[in-house]
Image 1 (tube, rainbow, N blue to C red):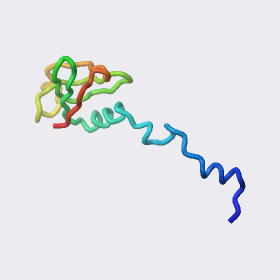
Image 2: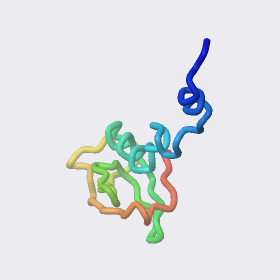
Image 3: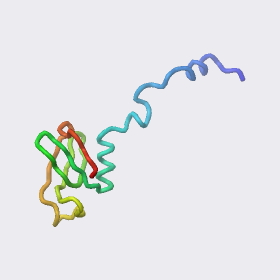
Image 4: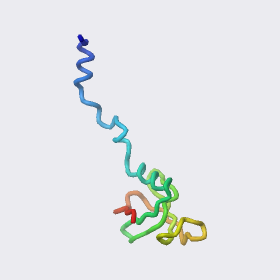
Length: 95
């Protein structure tokens, strides 16, 4: 099979960085998935440990509904809400 020089060049060229789906999956993408699944999380921040369910994920923060582990996220069980900057998350754990 004969190929034109242009086709051969495009096949030999490496893919552009940042062009794949994997490159677009970032920390916020993972956090949004955890929020959709209503997973209980422990968030380590410079101010200490916070735990609960992620309600929303913004461009630069998460809204965390704080409640006890093992208790479903219900309005009656939520002790407080916290807005946590993404830059302030040192570690996120799924216990």
